[in-house]
Amino acid sequence: MATPYNVVVIAGSLRKESFSLKIANALAKLAPATLKLDVVTLHDISFFNQDLEAAPPADWVAFREKLQKSNGVLFVTPEYNRSIPGVLKNAIDVGSRPYGKSSFLGKPIGIVGNSPGALGGVAAVKHLQNIMPGIAGPIMGQPEIYLNGVGDAFDDKGNLTKESVQKVLQQYIDAFAVFVEKQNK
Image (cartoon, rainbow, N blue to C red):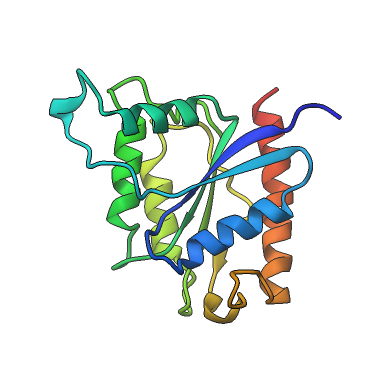
């Protein structure tokens, strides 16, 4: 078998029991052999400040290099106040700079919205779909994924136990694998 495509999976929440992190880890377990998912949290990325671009902090450089070495990026985001969390926007700002040298450029993008509520993070996904063009590669349009009611989808060890969510995640990661392969040929 060929070497798997490396995909950076960005969990858009800092919360210890983050549903986004649990979903990202579940996707890593469900991924087909053609993908290797590297789940990344945003705990160690400092605030973006354009004044620091001439000599960027080591955490920015490491994050940018991880993105640049990848074959794709998958965002798993909750919805905060009808948008993405500030920490996720900060990571996008860090990764997309300096101007004209975005580390997301050319990378196929996937977006998974989630919420314990009824809407599944749809507004957050739509905001990411507005932010990424111009600084990234193509965004997978179908299937879209808005996971609602995820509050009871995991056991106390963070394992995915809700069959309906597992089925949707499997369909999505299989489609994303095909998308990544197509974009990297």
